[in-house]
Image (cartoon, rainbow over all chains, first blue to last red; front, side):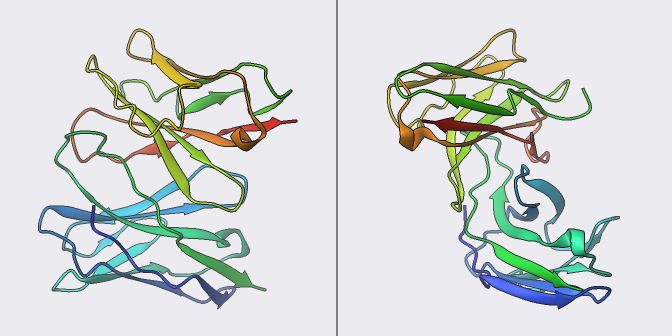
Length: 113
Length: 114
């Protein structure tokens, strides 16, 4: 899997949009960008994933640059419950081997009241 | 079930004892993973099961660790002769067999070795 680079921590005011960046400059053509988050003392929670088009679901939006070397996860109206560590992961869909997820250190997002 | 179910949620055991951790994946999911996360650390891959194929055990840290998956569904992770450094949360995850499907995690089993 390609490596990703994320800032170690970010703050965001409650009610504002939280924009979490991720660099994945060595991503290959068949690798997807996945975002998970882990709230303290809980298992990782899937948020969203995409290949090259922007994606939106009930939790967040994912904006992937045209060259696919970076992406941004957007939480449109952050709440205190969104405080968590957010992981950006690139993963191929080859189906071979473990084909699991390699978690880096992520971004610790702190929502301020 | 609706999600990945793990038990026990918390386990305190004495050093040297054996422990078993159970994972019940999402119904219909044939791929199953075990990860370990020590306090303040990232996730560490342990083992992967896919259908009837031989499991990928490349992440198991020592021969005290083993896992099995019976009937292609429930999995048990066994740690023999536990050590204090085994204290961590053990996370199970599953996905459908089709490559590319999202991996879903359970809430983990918190193991404390005293």
